[in-house]
Image 1 (cartoon, rainbow, N blue to C red):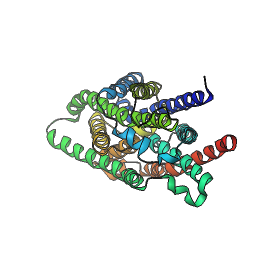
Image 2: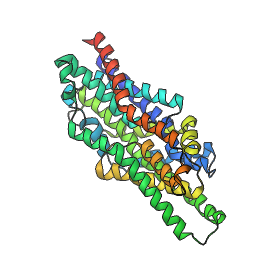
Image 3: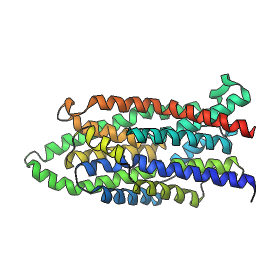
Length: 341
């Protein structure tokens, strides 16, 4: 077996490890509300979420994977080592924020790490002043715009859904409302898990395909079936492992949830993510959207129902994710280049 083939295999394995970490890091997004409202136990919730994570492979396209793998970084600067450096940047940031319980975005960690590693390669080849040549500006502008648009869309939809629920059930008692919505929340949670798998697994599939193209094993950017199924399988297995630190933050510390508000938050987040996946073909943060939706249902009663201090901490973590993971990706690529150049 050639050294190049071993390298490619190792990088693909690291990508799948990232996908697995993405699953347990972002599992909180799709199960926090259903656990917080006690519709399902934590064990039941992760099984439910993992199943719908994987089912998305049969129904969701590959537009996001193509955006991540070939639409954001100039491929002439991409090598297998660049992708390895980017993955290390994403994994390190994900593990640090998971450890402290901050619901940051695995998606943006991946994009930041990949960008940082590619910029480090350009700096090595052409000088640090040309580092940004590695980036495709239009794609990055759209992605950065959606960092703001996605959580706001989740917030607005969730707020609107709560208004509709209160109007439709204005003559029903809270106890009767919760009886209905405990059942409906099974559907909304399933839809959120489906949208999470459909958007996030594609990012890893795009990265793996990028490795195959950069190594010359593929001539065009077309994803083999085994890449797609591996990515969806890894994220589903990661979800099965849970992510209880972030479940606690998202499900109980940000605001108090009832089955009706949990349903509205999950439905709003799922619709927002599916819109970005199927129509915009953009990698969005399921964490950002879900947190925005939870804040939306919390603020319907009164603004003080949302713990805005915690929300501010989460916002800062979001802002720092891309530059922090890019820095780790840059450092990782710089270290790699010491040994391979």
